Image 1 (spheres, rainbow, N blue to C red):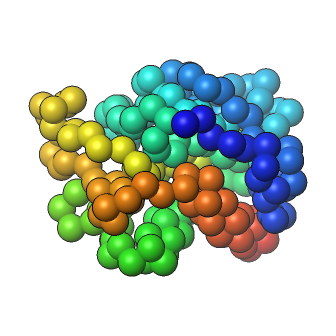
Image 2: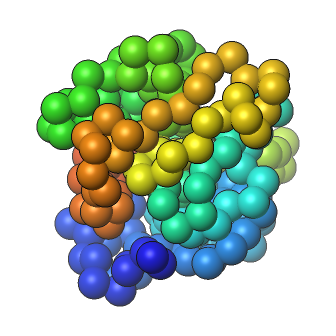
Length: 199
């Protein structure tokens, strides 16, 4: 089922709040490509690029990120060029996702530098990316992929994969409301970004 974003009214400060938070594409190659595009970096800082069907998701070290259409969460937050975010944003983003998983009684941990695992299975990945925008600044974007209701076996898709995937649904034995998880993560992430901007 397609994400229902029009009913979401985010209570956020740095990330765009209210009904103007999302830039939605039903299908797109990668939310990161949009989030790092110069046009969006100039006009849409603080907005969230999100899709139901990401066909060429990006992971770390030029690897692919696989998700199942209409079942998982794949989004990128447009960070702009005013702040120079580093690994600590990835670490705190991982902490946010682990805390949300814990609320659902799923024990998870960060596998450095940027993945979230449940036991020996990957459930989420984070990517902080940038492109040069002039001599002294970079456009930045924070991308998040989280397995919510998918049932894919990664090694069947990628023979080079080192770990298989799990998801909220696999761990809990039932489907989970994607919009609810999205709001929980974004509102916590907003506090993380706001804190780092103010440091």
